[in-house]
Amino acid sequence: QVQPVESGGGLVQTGGSLRLSCAASGGTFSNSAMGWFRQAPGKEREFVAYISGSGSSTYYTDSLRGRFTISRDDAKNTVYLQMNSLKPDDTAVYFCAAATWGAAIVASVTNDRKYAYWGQGTQVTVSS
Image (cartoon, rainbow, N blue to C red):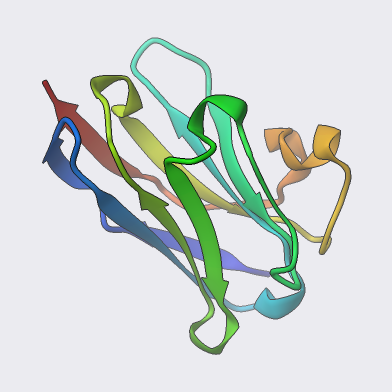
């Protein structure tokens, strides 16, 4: 099984950038679709971004498209989330998740119940 471990979170000012990393050990990383989700205080966990197992397909929640970029490096068993022009509303715990499938329809890739393995999360705080 794939075990994701997130890193790269921290405190940043509005307009700043962060790059989150998710190192995945075990399993067959290169065949696994990966997703990023986030959970702000008092809110439900929400979908952020998805990348297929092949890396050829990505998808973002509409409000973040253009500011966030997901990518993967299979040689390093790592998926990244580049976050630019950060806003206070981006403050949340960011989770990396691994699927047991390589690609799926939008309704599945945005559904956290479709992902089998989860990291512990990394805190991102954007100050105003």
